[in-house]
Image (tube, rainbow, N blue to C red; front, side):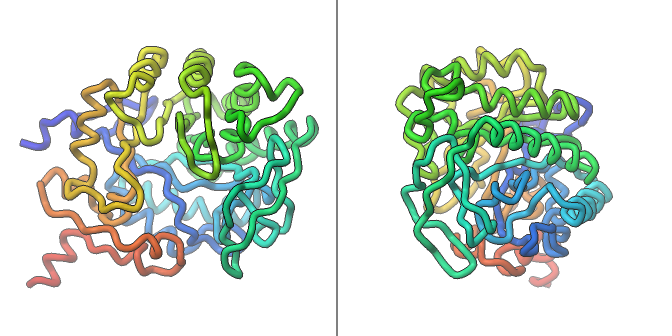
Length: 369
């Protein structure tokens, strides 16, 4: 029966006893208040999905200048911490536990979203328009972070991590993927620096390692995960040394005793995936490459998850399947049909539609009765 499959086996993640190996991935949904405070709707959304067992909450910015899009939650003000505390308390009461992803957008931002000019490792513009409250606008030239800016940004990550703990999160995930600030330092098409943060691989990974070390020193390495997207092309990233860079970065991270490493769009047959698995001594979480802009598989990605587990992953994060199915784990255990994901327009428009109105199995049966 399905409950004997590897995907449903219990797993120990640090102090957390997980009843299965599925994780709800961090998913930007643009439902926070304008000031970055988590909303009532967010409390409802995450509580509906508490059956995931372990949730990584959506990207929260550590400071104003790091804000990417409108209605993105933050972790730098008292009201934001209080709002997140309502979320974690409700999820915990429903049996779930949460980490939160800390994400600085870097050049992925706009003055109409944050009130500030975005910052980046180098003054290189995002090669695409960006969403703002008044619609899509051309990106702006970011300001290059100087040494003081780098140090203050690291301090903001530390403050956000401490705020996350005060808000009731079990830990944090440092976002060094998908073309945001830390990834911009890693990639040589966005990092043209000539100081100790640019040029060689050892220099380009320095900022990620300094952020991780500072956050780990503040809240404990066992409460810190890191997300990477090797060869990821999001937000204008074009890596030309993926196979050389990531083994060096992963080997350095492997010395730090972190909670987990989270690989985005992982492919079990990839030589790089296998190399990272061999280098990484701890918990490896993998997010399967299911294709964006194409229908989700009828199994919600279960077969892809099983393939990654067989290839050496310990935990599997799923995104869209959890968006459309608040009771995804229960549906998979029962072999029940999954709700289809609605058009991507509903991912980010705000309001309950396409957010909290996906039915659970019991709701579907009640409607059919």
